[in-house]
Structure formats: C-alpha cells, structure tokens
Image (cartoon, rainbow, N blue to C red; front, side, top):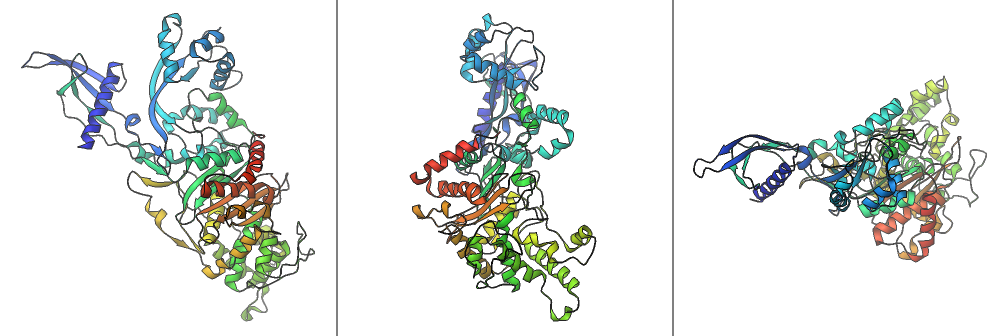
Length: 606
C-alpha cells in the first residue's frame, strides 16, 4: 500500500514535469473516452534513473546526497556583460558575480563570451523569471541532479559518473597519466548499481487539467534505488576537516568494535560538490593543477613509511616469537641508531614505547632477524632469510601488504619487503641486519596506507582482531556487505597485544612523547603512539595512532601530516581532539586556544 501511494505521488510529479516540457515524457495521439466523449492525452512517462536513484545518508540519517531540482542560468555568449546589473538581478554584489563567473571558466585564458552556466537557488530563479522581459539574453533552465547538502566528505561521497564528464575531459586534457590516479568516485561509484535501481515507463491518460484517468497501455515496473546509510558521522567529519584543512595528509577514525569509519579526511580538503557542479570548472582546474594533489584519495591510495607508530607491530611480533618479553630492557645505544630526544634508560617494553627509543626497537628486531636455531648454527644467511620471511608473515596478518577491501573504488596495498627483495636490491644473498634495520623504526622499504594505519590501531585496541574498515553500514534496510561482518584475526596472541597498552598509555602521560595531548583532565585515558618519519626531500612527516578509552575503546584514529615535523606536536593534537569531540561532543576550554591555533594553521596552506 505504501509503495502504491509513493508511486502515485511520483506519477503526479512526473505528469507535472511533463506539463513543463520535461524530456522524460512523450505524448502520442489523443484518446477519446467512448462513454463521456472526453478527449485525453496519451502520455508515456519515463521513470528515469535521475528520479529513482537512492540517497546517501550519514550514520545519524542526515541526508548528505540526494537527487533534486537545480536551476541553471546561462549567460549570453557575446560580451560585454553588465556584471553590476546582473548582481542586482540576482541579489549578489559585483565581486560575487565576477568570482562565480571565474569559477565557472575551465581555464584562466578562456575567451570572452565563453559559455557559462551559474547555479541558482529557487529564490534567485524566481527573481530571474520575474524580470525575464528585461533580460532576453539570459536563459533559465532546470534539471534533476545529485545535490550535496554538505561540503564535507568529498572523497567518500564521490560523484555520479554521468555527471562528472566535464571533470573527466578537463583531467584528461591536463595530465592523462595523473588523471587515473586522482579519479575516485567514492561510494557513488562503488555502489552505483544499488543506488541506480531500474527505470520504467508509465502510460497515463491525462485531461487538460493534468488529472489522470487510467492508463492507455501497461506500465513497465520500475525499481527504486537503495539508500546508502554511511558509517560517517558528518559533524565529526566536518570538524576533522577543519583541523587538517589545506595541509597535506589524512585522518581516519573508526570504531574498532565494528570497523565502521567515523571520519575519513584526505587533505587538502575541497567541497564535495566541486567535481560535478556545472559552474565549478575553474575550481576543478585549480585542483588538478595544484602541486599538493588535493584530488588524491590519500587514506586509500597513498602508501608511506609509517615511522615509529610501526614499533607497535614489531613489538607484538617480537613478543609472539620470544625475541623479547614485557620486562626486556635495552640501553639507548646511539652507536646503533640515533634517538631524537634524551630520555631515561628503557628498562621495559612499556618504557621503550613511552620514550619511543629507537635503539630499543633496533635491538628488538635485531634479536628477531639474527636468531639462529640450533639446526642452522652454521648457516646464518639462511637463518636471516627465514626470520625475515617469518616476520613478514606475522606482519601481513595485520592486513598489511594487501588491500583491506574497503568500499572505495581504488585502494593501494602498501608494501612489506621480502628476503628476495633484499637479494635483488643488495645484489647479494649475504646481506646483514644492517641492510634492513630501518624496518625496526617503520622506515626504509615499508609502506602503509592510512586505512591500514587505522586498522593497525584497531587491532591493538581489540587485542588481536579486526573487522575490515568500511563506509556503508546498511544498504536500504540490509547491510553492510557480508564481508564487512567477518571478524579477522592476526597471528599474535591477545596477551601480547595487552602488553603494548601500558606503554601506549604512558606515551600520553608525563614524560611520554605525547604527554601534552593527554585528555586526563576530562577523564579520558588515551592509548597512543607517535611517529616522526624522516624525509630526505623536505621537512619530516608527522604520524600518530591511538584509541580511547584505553580500557574499552570505541574510537581508533590514525593521523599523517606530510612535512609537518614531529608527530607529538603536529599529528597527536589533531587525533586527540577528534577523540574528544566524538566521545564528549565538545572540546574542553583548556584546549580551545590550541584548537583555534590548529584550525588557523590548517587554513594557511592550499
């Protein structure tokens, strides 16, 4: 019954559109009622994809993307155009008029009179209709298109392919090779078949007043597209985007209990509607040309060395294989590898994590790689190869060096080196631990994506298991996709993950590398790990992973900021403020000045 009522409402809407010369309608020869003699128009109304496509909503059912009517104002091709008078017509100032026209031009040197269409609100469209006699050179039209109710979440929401043709042609003309790397249709593309539904045809008999009187042919059944209910919290997403703004990097926050992604930021950020908006061609050109690649979907597509946050993984593997115990201590031997800050001796694993002591983890992995079983006492080359292969096997169980299967169109697998890789790279099978020691601090040949970093934090939070990260929690009334409900386990015992948590908590306490980012003042115990990634081509990169509350985690966050310096001072503050915003709904007064400073800095880049 409910469906029939919905169908009748849709039919009434379509007939109304038909009266306005909708392209979705055709009229054939009229029909006469043999009883009354009244003549009715035979109409064939197409229930098109644009009208039945499903919506996209956030986790709290706020509509983020919908198909709605948009108004377009086509400007005259022949100059000159009186921008002052046009502004008065639309209620804009002359600066706004010039800016909107500039944003609509696909390139800066576009010739005078280049065809431009401007999107208008319903109120602006009414003003144009009212004064249409005075503006015969302006053309006002309307059509149905995907409309974004939020500027946030551009790489997640994506775009409908048929509405992005202008972007495709711009991108291909600019740099063909880079276009395919930057192309990312988000959930619109990934779930396109489910969103689209199936179009059909209705055949109403309509009188002169637009009232239906039965049908003249059998209707073709149509199927309404499914709504997507995302895992995103749009308010948290918008807040996280303000923290990163125009800096290069990413932030991924997820619920470790489910794998649901709460916030997904790829920075520099841009307005979600930019790719498909008919009057944003100039903005798209700037995005395509910008050296910071704002269109690159960083959390899924960019794999980088993770830095010291990877010490968590190495420590878990070393505990599992018996290379260390929670009470193992190592001296901070600067002759082995430099440590960027002075600290007391790390007499336990907890202190090693608290101080992020590079020599501690150098010696931890050295024990693992150079271990020689009795049967191989005379063959240390074979032992090193076998030990590295075993290390890689355990690390891969974290979902690394492979795609996690997140529901975005493109995802990079990252990279973990194999013994064969070093045989080829070093041109000998007799390489030693010094050939790969940088792996002990998360650098060198290892590369992880932002999704993998966040999943790594979730695994520690869960003491050894995870659900694949995903962006859609339900498709209509069903969902998510079955593979996102399959729990995956690492090869590490839960006790060895539990041994990491005291050190991660100590990181956020007095004397720890991120003690300034503690949330103890609001009663939240955060477990975290900072990372500073050496960069030979500029300033170091800042990284942080963590979760909260430490004893019963409900949010895990990974942050990576390129060329931002220390993880403790750049990445950790962003992560903990997202945690606080999610857990408390607001930022404590103590951190308000800090928050404003970060947001101002975020606006200083692109």
